[in-house]
Length: 251
Length: 278
Ligand SMILES: Nc1ncnc2c1ncn2[C@@H]1O[C@H](COP(=O)(O)OP(=O)(O)OP(=O)(O)O)[C@@H](O)[C@H]1O
Ligand SMILES: [Mg+2]
Image 1 (cartoon, each protein chain N blue to C red):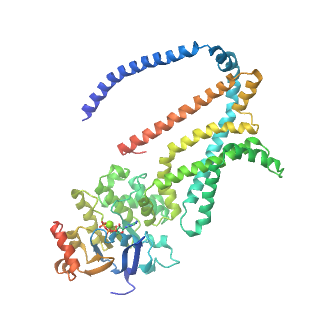
Image 2: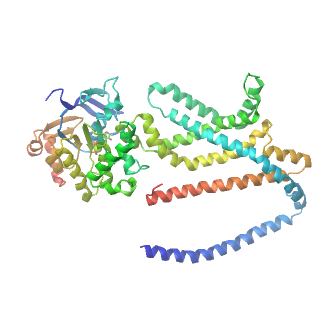
Image 3: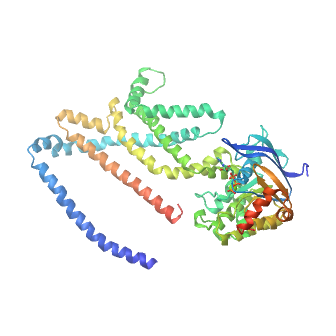
């Protein structure tokens, strides 16, 4: 699976918070158009790994290469590489002082230097595509959680990223709002968007993932196609984790 | 639910009406009694002559109001300048990374320094000291140096207010902005500062109430503003009433500003509760 064609290559990434070593040599390669789901216990470092990929968290050791550009190189233009990576957070993190439209167009206008009219037309088209056309001029706090999270996804998509990172995008949502967000992700996967998705929604991971990675004790302990990880996990710790999930009725 | 809250409001109004009447009556009785005691105390005539001389008051007031224009100018110019300079300082202080360490350090030292100094000292040093150097092309205008001194002083306070505002914006906002490819400066400019500024308006207005009052310090280097006018008149007549005229002017100007600040705070809270558009 090595090759220049990888959308994302992570090699030996180490990350600590003070004395807590969260990532202890993570290796991961994601091909173009591949959907990878990260699973693992709470606190296993899924969010940390995603945040490290675009260096929102600085790392102590390792290499991260996105579309052939090494973001961890000392002379890397981090802002330029970040433009190619969209990230959507668990807590949406929309800008509360801006309308939905301005949230979406801010980066295309300021970073990609698109003309405002074009950025707004693109944003309006995206909103329409995801059923939010009438929310264009609302402020985020007028929207439901599901709507806010869809706007956050659209905001990331407006930058036309090569790689989309989704960090438990449904876990802050009421159950009845989860479906509308998962539907968007399904659609994106269908269009071939390269994605790394941290999730607790095991049935969703099983359905959408090309590959599932089990993060445990700071490393990716086991990975493979969803049928194998969920059906016949090799590692005892993976089995243990999945058994707990089943017991909690989440699979 | 709307019906319920409307009827509650109606009920509230009639109860409120009676409460206001009671409060009014009690206030009149209370302050009337205090007033009566004061006016009938043995020392009152002397106090009245010295502090509440109607003739002196009406003589001093027009001049004082005219001179107060200088205070207003000092205030407005120093306010605008320190708003800008304070923001620059706050942003410099929040620049990340080791490269900017000297700039951060400079901003910290500046703020500590000017917050530590008594205002009158800075005004004296600038307004007397710099003209004393007799430098070519440097103005001797005391009014000018007064503005510079007030700006230097209040920029330090204002930058601290801004900094608190910037720090009050949750780090996830910066993370979201940076992850979209915005630079640190763009994230500050479009995402963090606009949210911070909204939150810092009330504490800023509080600082400006202080600035408004501190404009009288500039009188000590010979700018004949409202306080100086009062003290000239006061020593000429051997009477303190002109100072009371000045006090009245400050009260009349400052209390509305303080009320306005409170109103802004209340409105922001209401908007937030309603999840409203601003
Ligand atoms: N900024 C931080 N400072 C200190 N410790 C942190 C920080 N962020 C995360 N951690 C710690 O790192 C560990 C991994 O956290 P992380 O959020 O990556 O886990 P996670 O797998 O995403 O968990 P969850 O499923 O609950 O979201 C946790 O022990 C957490 O307490
Ligand atoms: Mg997480």
